[in-house]
Image (cartoon, rainbow over all chains, first blue to last red; front, side, top):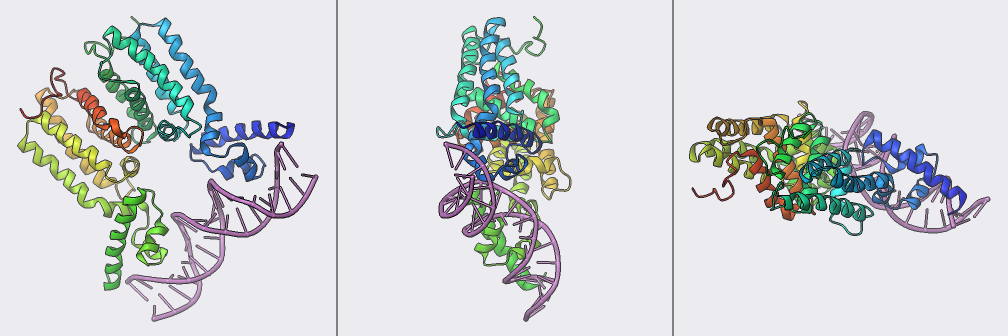
Length: 191
Length: 191
DNA sequence: ACCTGAACACCGTTCAAGT
DNA sequence: ACCTGAACACCGTTCAAGT
């Protein structure tokens, strides 16, 4: 990669982050190029699709999310680890408005640049889920895709202006459905 | 309304239904006008916003959904009525791909043409929910907006290609969280 | 190698001009 | 009253022409 190309790459990524923060995941590519003071075609060659742009934009955060699962696995009991990670996942998936739709469709499309990172996240969740299921604290009739789907659904809800205020409560309701100890999974936080 | 205007109105509605079936809720307005053999401006005056078009397009179905609640209220015990209606609601909200996002945002925007119909649906669900709560078969820490949100979330999930196959199972998980009789709400169908 | 500008086929909005 | 065509400001894609 030539020096000027490298510089443009970084510049575009920084500007994209800014624009996407303002306008969400379906921000105008043209706008990003314009603000970066670069030809639209230049942006499009660095990132031929919206997915490749977001793959670069979210890479670090997606890796952190995947890593977080392993961390919680050793530091917390399985059910707590699962819920804590689920919460982090919901928050991430909603970090940029509209990104959840991108990830949901990437999850089903092996050609998407976001497919691999999504799969990694899914696998990380799977491990936590299986631990909790083995322990008997998570419902057994659920798999990693269900977990990913529910995470996406909560992320989507939190991104809808009308539902956002209820996000925390809906999170509580859904995690309550995932865990099996209906007795007191609400208060279970500092045990 | 003049005769030709009336004719155009009906024609546009029919064509719109067709195009939306093919391309989902964010179909091109221009395309609808084109297929109807009418100027774009004509479509836009009959339906100044996408919401007004969908208000007309969904009116009958939304009324049917609202009506269905009252019907179930008298024909079934509260918990069954709630779940049955919830199922119909999820199916409806997913009748046209992408319509769920339209409804979710209309739900929070009193200026939207879809605001009133959404409110009616919400209220219809509220009655069923309250009956079940009074009976003790639905969790008490939930209100009509939560129900509407969960219905929307399931509709959204069903609209995502990757999650659609799991729709029924996710429906089961979420209704399990709404009802309180965790013992056997799965099999409870023909009692 | 890498970048650019322009042409292209789209989109929804707006409005003066027609019947 | 109602409709139309065109102008406008956008969008992403593509590619020949420049350095």
